Each structure stands twice: as structure tokens, then as C-alpha cells.
Image (cartoon, rainbow, N blue to C red; front, side):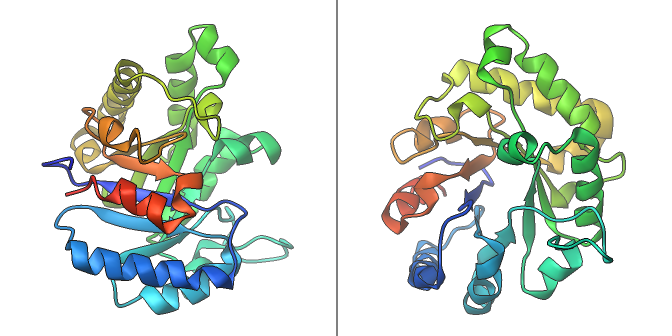
Length: 252
């Protein structure tokens, strides 16, 4: 168990899941009630098709339901997009923005992610902004430079610190089974913390910094114990109740 930390454990289901997974949400609710978490928060971000159903059965529990993306626009002729207010309307409490898969496959820029973050924060959604370097950038020694640039250009100037979360997800670690060593994770999270303090002053103390990238039941305890790590953004291991519960077991 990781003691004396207010952790946020977020499960990113990506493009996985169906209504058959309602039973897992029920199991999570029962587990959370039994565990009686004092400080930690649990969040599941399924595809948009499941948010309404998941939020309906979890609204009387401490399990939060979120989304994986939102528009930088509030309404209008933007076919296929969904606004933060629409997400709130179906029960979403949070949103993940700037995930490397969207930066890569949808070619999302720092400017766009910043605009989305502003919109999400204005709608009082817990806003998780992802940053991370590629393997080539890591090998070139540019990890901190890349992350510093992403933080500078992806985050709004005006924030609600209780609603902003940063997730460090090294691109080369996502789904690969590879994980940076603890010293590297500490170095990056400490760097992010310093950048946030420099930009936002005292407000930065309330901004959680999560680690993501092949987090699983075998490495979660070690990762969550690292200074400046305030939780985890979990991918594949959040899809199966037994695997996700094993990670949550390390929370206080």
C-alpha cells in the first residue's frame, strides 16, 4: 500500500468496451465501497458510447466516469465532435486530452489541445492533459525539452488547479511493456512540478501529476511510491477488473 498520498487512478479504455462491461463497473463500485478509500480517487474513461450508461449506475458511488477527448468548440456545425457541455450532460466528470495517440494519429497540435483544455476547464470537467516523448526523442536526450514545450503550449494560462491534471506518458512505453526506471520517472515528474510552479505559483500544489505507460499490477506499487507521482493513467490493465483491482489495492 502507498501511504500518505492522495492518488488519482484513471483507466483509459481507448476504443474498447461495450454494454457487456456494465458488470465490471458494478464490481468496481462494490470494491470501492468495501475498500473505503480515504484519499484516492478512481476514474474510468470509456468510449463515449458507454459514458451515459456507466455514469447512470455509478452516480451514487465514488467511482468517477470520464471521456477520452472533447471538442475545443462549444456547439455548431462540427460533425462528429462532442463538446464538454455535452459530455457533462451524459454524466462525464472528466476528460483526457492530448494523449499521444491523438497527437500522432489525429495530428493534434499543442495549440488545439490548449484550446480544448480551456473549454473543458470552463465547463468544470477534471481535465487530464497528457505529455510525453517518443523513443527517438528520448535517445537524443530531448525528453525534458519536448515535455517542457508541450507543457508551455498545451496548458492554458488561466486554470482551475483542482480541475487540472498532468499525465506523463512516454510514447515508447505505451502498450509496449517497457517502463522508464524509477529515477527517470522521478526526474521527469520533478521537472513537470517545477515548470508548473514557475508558471502557476502556489496553485501548482493542487495539480496532480500522473504516470502512464504500461502500468500494471507488477509495477504499480513501485511507480506510485515515487516522489511527485500522484497517481496513474492506466491503459490495458484497466480493462479487466482483476488487473485494475490489483493496482487499486496499492492505494490508501
